[in-house]
Length: 426
Image 1: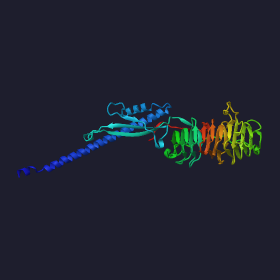
Image 2: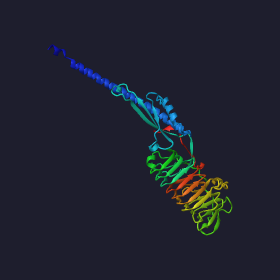
Image 3: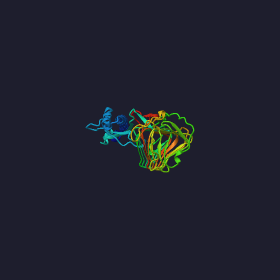
Image 4: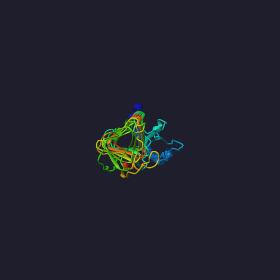
């Protein structure tokens, strides 16, 4: 009985000890969890800073030093990659999703973190890994060479093996739709920048089927605002002189003058055509054919075509067009005669004229000057090959397909886009 009485109160002691251990366990868990959360936030800060630093290195125009600067910035934020024990690790995974492309830099920062109490149950360290993505905006302006004025729907399409290259210049698309730009079917779009008014465009759903898009993509930009010349004065439109056979010289009576045609057909029936330098006003169809021994025209230096009313452009299958705008460099060298305010513009379809500009399959054209059609779509078809060595493209929408290729140069009349500073985007 004396022994039994001596054991009274032991359950209380055991319970108290147990509760203390449980409380200490929860305290230990809370301390470790809080510490790990703090470390993760610090690793995230290091990753963010490293991503921006690497993006700045890309924006400098001489990439290749991203790893060094990312390591240095991570160290400044408390994560040293050169430690002998438990060093941090900075890696560069391929950017993905809507932020994939040569202008984007993704950074991972990983760090083994020792715990205070959990280490009593496991000798393994808790590794914190976070990611961040920066974009190299470069604080520069990207001069525009393609301006698309359509404000809704799909306004830019490069499909079925087509290839569009803009030389040290960019594209601005005014559509607010999420599918405003589509590159599909093993096509290639290579540009300095792609500026989208739309803020909801997604690369992952818009660049598909083995296609590639290179260049910095900037969403939410302002619409392009081109500077357009005034309409030329004209009167007494003549009939189409190009429907007969033979050798002809078309155009104004004096070089640099103005002439109006109800329609103008160039390069049919085996005819050989030379275009006189000057201003051509067309109220019907401007038609370049392929029936003149492979050349739609011989000579077209210092010309400006103004399409008005319901006029339209047709470059047919297999045509070979050679047009050089006033003041621009001719294909064989030298400078074309000046046309004043129309210098640098080869074809201008007036605002309000919605007739489609069509360049059909198989044509090979050299257009030394801009092609403006602010209210109309432009279609480049199967196998067409065009070079715009001076000037750019202005249209409501633009479609390329079927193996066609096009090279476009910058156009000061089409303005420019701010590419922005290197910054964090994800």
